Length: 302
Image (cartoon, rainbow, N blue to C red; front, side, top):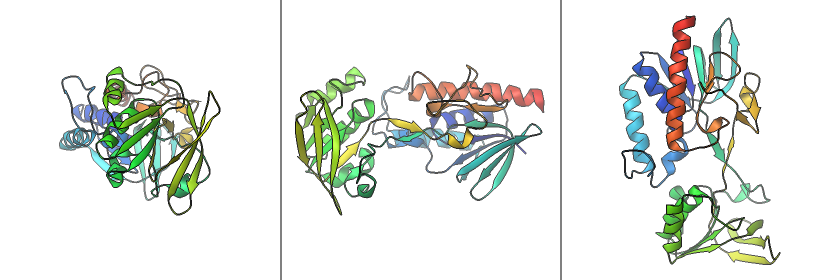
């Protein structure tokens, strides 16, 4: 039986594993997609104390190597259910099942969609949620980027290095990101910012052809003819499979300051939990706290 299963190998899960291994606990991380989560796709990370600037991918590679060197194990699979019986957790995946003394949920969140007709059909055919992944496909072309916070601001800077013009459209009349990023965006001559625009229609059959926006103030309709649209409007949690064991607030897992859920021995960390601030540095904090109290729980109860 394992000491701890961590569901998700993003920054919070990796940070938690690191601290648990330093306390000599047997740890298994289960990841269904790719190690590092969304930060791995970030072109530049500049909010880690002591590190001026690093790419998201390099940061993830370094942290993963550190965790693996300490002896943590990884399983690439999807968790489909968790149960607890006789003080032991059973974690069922698509291809296996595991028993553990504690479980730490670190599933992060997925990209929020516009939920418009034709959106899903044109993913990979003009609609994208990752400028780092797909920006180079639109070299010397005009693209549209939708969003108003840090991810959108970073993506606009990435795209500006490839694309002829980047039309950065926001729903509200201002940005909600870091001021330093806003300043960098406004300094770029090929990033054209337009506020108060709401996407109402996506046109195209086999590929994206154009986007229809409505001005939320004037109700004016505006069409952007483009083959590339990048959507960066936030994240949504993926916690439905845990709802019998945790309390949720708008889909996010409620914990106390120890990262404990309502089920003893079950913790939640990172972007999947209900919290005021979702940043890389707060994910480290969550992981460290959960590791400390999970370790104490194991030593006390087993």
